[in-house]
Length: 334
Image (cartoon, rainbow, N blue to C red; front, side, top):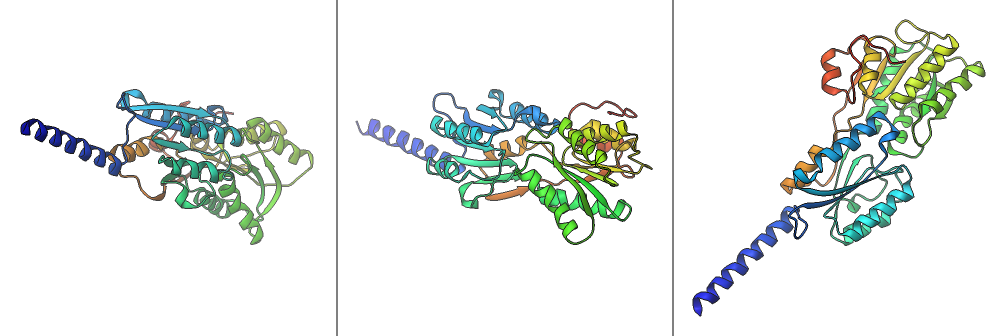
C-alpha cells in the first residue's frame, strides 16, 4: 500500500512540475493534440506584394508540421479584424498575433486577451495602446523608414524639392510613420508637397496613378514622387510615361517606393526608378522561435531595414533582401 501511495505521489509531483514548467515557459499547447494553438489576424494578400509575402510566411511557419494549430484571418477592415480577434479569444488560442489595419481601436480586445491569459504578439504594424496590453511586438520601424527615405530625398533631389506624396491606407502605422517624415520636412521648409493623395485601403496602383494624373492635369510642377509602396510607385511611373515626362536616372522626376519587391529592386537597378526602402515581411520565423523557446521579449523589437538606390544596389541585394518573384536582371516592370 505504501509503495502504491509513494508511486502516486511521485506521479503527481511530476505532473505538477511539468505544468509549472509549461506556465513559466509560456509554450502552452492545445490539450489532446499537443499543438500550439495560434490565431493570426492579418491583412489580405491582395493588398500588396509585401502582404502576399507576409501572409505566405505566416502560413508556412505556423503549420501543423511545425507544431501549430493555427488559423489566419485576412481582412483590411479594422472592425472585421477586431471581430476575428474576439473569435480567437473565445476559441481559447494560446497566442494571438495581430497586424492591424488601423492603429487605433484595439484596447478592449487586447485587454480581453490579457484577461484570458492569451499572449498577444504584434507583428509588422504597431497599435496605439498601452504597452501593458500586449506581450511582444516584432515591427518595422515605420518612422525610421520614413526618416531614411526623406533623408535620401533631401540629399538626391535637386532643389527646390517639389514632391508628390502618395500615402497608403490612411491611419495605418505604415502610412503614419512614412508620411510623418515628409510632413516634418515640409514644415521645416526643406521641401514642398505639391500634391497629397492616397492609394486607398488597398494601396492601389490604379489610385496612385490617378493621383499623379490629376497633378499633371493641374499643371503641378514636381520633381520627386514619394510612393508608400512599390505598387503605387509603379502606378505613378505609368502616369508619367503616359504623359511623356522623363523619370528615373537622368530624368526630370525621381521615384522612390517602399517594400523591396524584386520587380521594384530590378527597376531601381536599371535606373527606371531611383530608390526603394525596405520593409521586411518575414517576421514569422523569429516569432515562432520566441514561442518555442518560451522566451518572449517584453515590448517592441524592431527589424533592421535598409534603403537601396541605383548607385548602390547589387544582384546580391536583390537575391538576399528582395521579396516575391524576380523578373530577372535587366528586366523593367512598367
